[in-house]
Image (spheres, rainbow, N blue to C red):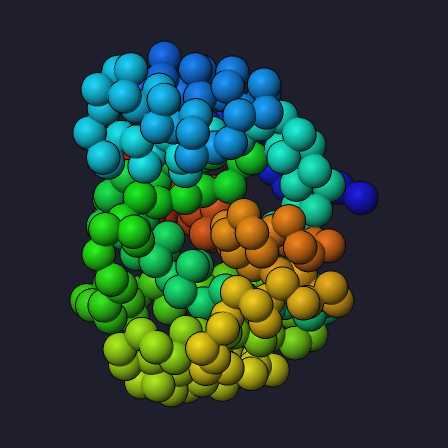
Length: 239
């Protein structure tokens, strides 16, 4: 089966979402320690202390670096961007939307060692529905419309403020596209998604990726699609 990312797509993602130059040496040291089976938290703390890194840069290390064993285990699970057509997709709603909003804001996004795009904003401030949320929703729904799955299940964390309102907006947009959709409010999205061994799961959450059979990096696919369509930078941003 053809797997994402293809080499030319990977090259594009590496170019537009590069590793910050000022932590490259620290990243190599974290990778080295993890290859020696040191726990991630210990490796990041050890290297961070050695280089006297601020908290944000330590968080970058923990988000970007993965040992080769993890990378090799996740690689076969990743499906091509158009493989969602006529398949069932389970979407980690806030995980995808926060990444898309990060793109639109021009905030830091990195292609991590396991080839998934990740941001660094979530741990430092709670997500709030804002001016970019509607645009992020439209980007996601438009992509799903171009590559229509047979079923779409979007899970949202009900504990986040205004999730009910967001679910209503999603249902309206997806209905307009004529897409078969189920928007679910849940207090345990991660737990629910980890059980989805049928269909494709859209997430960059490593704990979920490790539990499921097939996964897609939906924000990366959306960015690549818009790049190919020559959408202007203010619509979808790399760095």
